[in-house]
Length: 148
Image (cartoon, rainbow, N blue to C red):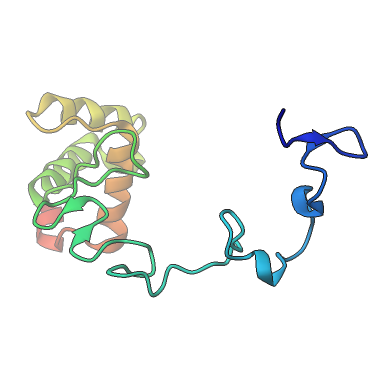
């Protein structure tokens, strides 16, 4: 026969410990040492060989030291993020200038067709547009390169 009996309210339990039910508030001081009794605000500072994020010293989150992590857009799923080179930016700006710029109708489609006609990395329309915005607002190309 097992130690688990029905309690007064008809549910399974040992019948002797009143702390088995979910109770709001803080854990009693004597029960904090038990498994699963730590507060949510428990800190990992002071862990042997670790830091505040729980990383082990000498190893990055991405793995072994010396290997450069391939960056992703967010999280651990999805495509790898490809960085834009200066040459790609120059070509994109040239495509933008040849399309007639924002003043001409359908410039996005024209820029995308010209970009795909070149032998460069595959980029979507949102990526091309955001890079054009970055070139305009953050001066990623010099004035001479823009006039090109």
